[in-house]
Each structure stands twice: as structure tokens, then as C-alpha cells.
Length: 137
Image 1 (cartoon, rainbow, N blue to C red):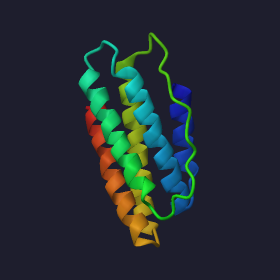
Image 2 (image 1 turned 90 degrees about the vertical axis):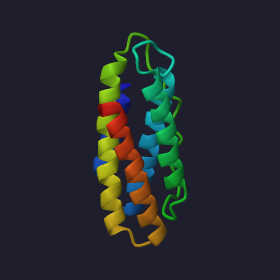
Image 3 (image 1 turned 60 degrees about the horizontal axis):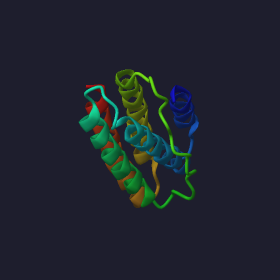
């Protein structure tokens, strides 16, 4: 799981166009959604947080799906968090990823040529910030 998060962060950092930033952010939201759904039923006092995180990630992903520059996002394989994973540490890792998504989307919004891209990036960045608050706090 940590390898998936690291790979997503590297893709975010490497994205250089608005279209790339939107695509990799969409994929990162999907990773957060999948990981959150996998962790939600586990014990650890984070059931509600992970359930809400999955919902917020879907909202962010769906906002980006309407961006004119999203041409094709890779449909990542369903993420399964291995048994024994420290779900508290994972929440912090996912919050960090979401923070990078917010930063990436804010930059994309500032440089987007299409109004639809700019608005989608700003709205999705707010969803990413909500994930940071939820999972990082």
C-alpha cells in the first residue's frame, strides 16, 4: 500500500500539464477511495473517518471527471490493504497524499486555460483539503 502511495506522489510531482495534473489527481482520489473502503471495516476507531474519506474521495474524483482536459484516467486495480496494516499510520499517509493532490490541483487551476478545468481543479482541491483535515487530524 505504501508503495502505491509513493508512486501516486511521484506521478503528482512529475505532472507538468493541466491535463496530466487532473489525470494523476483523479487516480490519487481513486487510490484514497479504494484504500479507505478497504480499511473502513477494520477495528481501530477509524470506521467513520475512513467511510467519510471514501465518500469525499469519490466527490473529488467525480468533480475531476467533468474537467474538459481529463482525457483518460487509468482505472487502478482495487486496492486491498493487507491485514495487520497500521490503519492509523495509513490514514496519515493518505492525508499526506491528499495534501499533495490539493497543491497540484491548486497549481493546475491557476494555469488552466479552460474555465471548466480551472473550476473543477479548485473544487476538487477543496475535497482534497477536506481529506487532509479528516485523515490528518
